[in-house]
Image 1 (cartoon, helix red, strand yellow):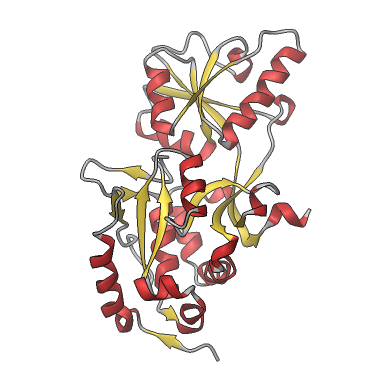
Image 2 (cartoon, one colour; image 1 turned 120 degrees about the vertical axis):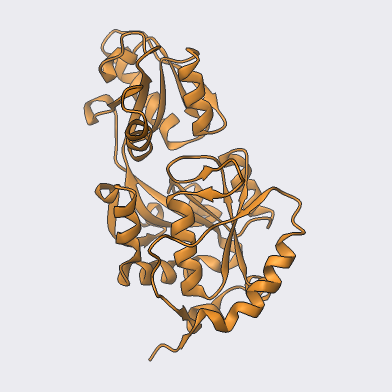
Length: 304
């Protein structure tokens, strides 16, 4: 039978870790507890299986860029959203704390993990065979691509086809940039002009570009588009890329460097997160249960 250890039993270790966290060279923000949080206690078998450095610190350090609704950097430096809730729930299972250090971009997160600065990147980022050469991926949701159009500057964009020949802002090296290139190819295939890609550092920057008229739309995951429009329905509309326009449903994952040995342990924590109901509760809290998966998958791209 799996032994259980109350999270309070590791509080001394976690407290020491928080003191150490204050010495970090990068801007940091500890995630807050999830609202309506579960009563889950730490699984000591999984805690004991953690890499020694994480056990000693009592903290898993996640890289995180600004990417609402997954991560939103508040004015006071706190990071809120889906990812912090997922990370806190995983940390409770593992008997440690979760901490997020902000990064400027996805490439910075990947390089930072490979250099040992961060333990994981919760993304969610597309699981690919190329990334799985260096990282373990744990798929925990799927996505479709959508484009947010400011009504004031949208230049007559009422459907996805209307983006042909226009400039669209996306996060550089993201899954959305990949989907936008497929949409542009679709445009050219029907005799329309190609889409001009404006690559930027994060989702907030793409939205600012669209609002400033530098782009006709901001590309993002549909979950993010729903979040943006729900907050300001009179300001934005969004259009969705279809299969005929090159869209695919992609697996989105947490990435962990293979060299750390954390991936298989985190996968088991995700399995417990699904089993105890916390995963479903978090997805429903943010109204994105439509992109939930029935179970986490380890290294899905390599399985094909």
